[in-house]
Length: 161
Image (cartoon, rainbow, N blue to C red; front, side):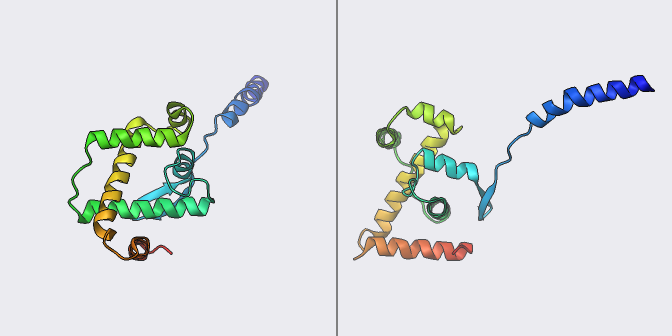
């Protein structure tokens, strides 16, 4: 009996610290938009990779930009029949992004666990959004106001402030 207790004590002393070190940090959900969760890691990615206009702003500003983009992309996916951007356009956009990023883009992607195909999809959607907005709001007297009104409407439909 004493031998079992000693073995149990030895097990606890040697194994429990390793179990404590093996803890995994769980990502935090910041918001649900439609059926998709925006995670804390998503916000870190768009901030580090400068993928939203407010990348240097507060977490709330980055979250709002990310939500707006998600809503706009979902809208154009659902409602429009925009042609896909040419591969050359996406490659050129990537060069522009890399230049604006400053520093080693490959290392930055790896640091936030974001793949090249994910980046290319993001940039492709940026091009699609720009084309849609130009087509829809280009003739408006105040295109920025018209776009903001559209985004406010999308946020309202999604139940966001």
